[in-house]
Length: 216
Image (cartoon, rainbow, N blue to C red):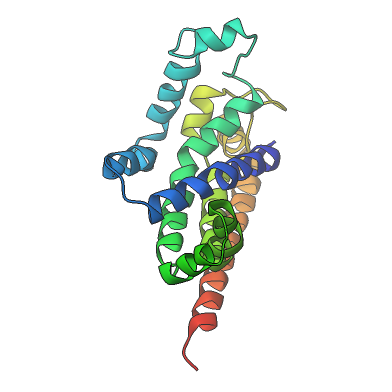
């Protein structure tokens, strides 16, 4: 369950977060600071509060829950709720890194592409994204690792239904609570290994980027 939901969460971050980060990094507009602050707010929220916020927005009696229910859509305690909780908590990590990566791209290269007739989406996809690629990859790796380890918001908004919404961190906690320390330790060790691999990958990505742009 964790692999599928964290993968779906990462895909959502890449698809929606990348254009948003590019827009924020390359465009000046009124209210930009407030918007960025709202996007980054989940970074400092206690995970349980983030889960309550999601429930208040998308629960049956939430701000949008009634309208979704009228359409036959129920999100709490489903796999979709797990993906939403992971994306809500981990998304800001990717957004911050992506924004910094796009901000570091030489604006003259983007202007040159536009001068040569490339449209906005072509400049974004064929110029900005490749140049910012290493930074985007590092941000995606960190966000994915954060999504895999998400606990508080997930258990509040999605619960712990085995085979449906139970993720590895939740399973680790339940095994420990039930007295099966060996199983909890094994799951914890697996999560530690995944985190270590992700951190190593991020360092290699950043190092490769530094070597690529190092003066000869």
